[in-house]
Image (cartoon, rainbow, N blue to C red):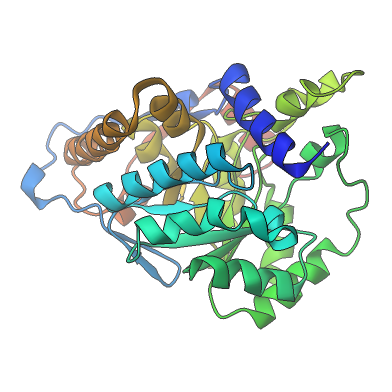
Amino acid sequence: MSRKKRKLEHIEYALKTGQSRATGLDDVAFVHVSLPEISLDEVRIDTQMGGLSLSSPIFINAMTGGGGEETENINRALSIASRETGIAMAVGSQMSAIRDERERQTYRVVRQENPNGVIFANVGSEATTDEAKRAIEMLEADALQIHINPIQELVMPEGDRDFSNTLHRIEEICQTVSVPVIAKEVGFGMSKETVTSLANIGVQMVDISGYGGTNFAMIENERRNRLLSFFNSWGISTAASIVEASKTPLMTILASGGIQNAMDVAKCLALGADAVGVAGYFLKVYKQHGLDHLINEINLVHDDLRIIMTALGVTKCSELQKVKKVISGDTYHWLSQRKLL
């Protein structure tokens, strides 16, 4: 099967399979603050993500590209939404365009529509340093995501089966490129041990992309004759993954995986994330209701986040990490057994 057809199937099955909401974020509750002692007008949501200054902690996470006109149209719309709302955006894996110049425009459109925006390039962990540089140059990117997806590859009928030397390749890219590198899972979460290994080779930002959002095992199983259904429930939840990652000193943590509203964003930031990526939910809003509705939805999420921060008595996103919270349910049991509480 061609890469182009596979990219289109990923979009189709992502919308079909949806999101489970098994993110663990429902296990997190804020302790009510009766005396917040601030005004809504004081609240700011601009933030720092590593060395990048962002006007919002929310960004559009990697979705697509490389699937011809349909994926170009999706990326154009997402880029316009990011421009109009002032949020950063990542593209899907650019390996398709690196290997087929005809697919370059399906990614390049993002920079064309948003010339001054913060944009993340994206390559797979199999990429060489030269391929990583080409992906960055293609978008004049401000950062580079390297996606790590062994479970997806194992379930994918035509996927990779050899994951040797992944850390070495990532280390070479970190030492070679001139923009920040983000090591990114694709929906199965990251453990403390994984994040520590990445930190040891020079990675300074991780996107934990936890279980509970778009499920690439389920998506790839839709494309298989013999199902590997045991992988459909495989992974570490978004909430648990954030706490796992937070145990690695000086690591910038991006949270993603099933984020659907401002309360999810606030909880991710409170657990230790520095920024929060949204993919499947924004794609669904766009496909069902159009671009104008998506722009309005992002603005409403910003408004709601400010309201939540006011209720908690914090004026900056970074202060959310200090608010009191209670963790229960499966997330509590996971973190207790992992001795992370």
